[in-house]
Length: 151
Image 1 (spheres, rainbow, N blue to C red):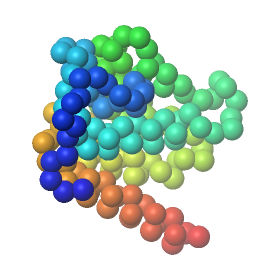
Image 2: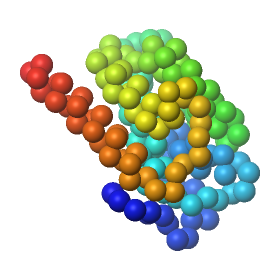
Image 3: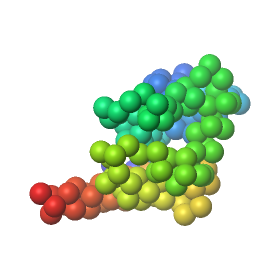
Image 4: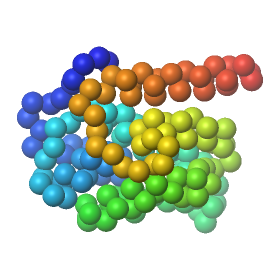
């Protein structure tokens, strides 16, 4: 997607809190609204991907790390918890991937680097998300090619 894509009327936060972009949570905590951009959707996809790699495998309940603390009735707590996990990505996220998803750690790391740069520090969403979109798609394409080569 090229150019600036934003919703004109965005006074509420649609979607699931657990998968909501950090900037959206930050503004919900402070002002109640923010302009929705495609980057927020991309970041939400990243969280859905992460949750899938951690929570969805047929293993005993005590082996699964549950990220439901990203989805409480306290927006500020959700924001801080999610930001902490992004900043401490290796130990708080990658180390918790279940066995079936360990092969996706590299692409998860690439997506995190694209969205949050090398140090994982939260940054404001750029107005033009086109370059980010392209880099994420490229990282996913490379991973798919790697899997095809192994089949």
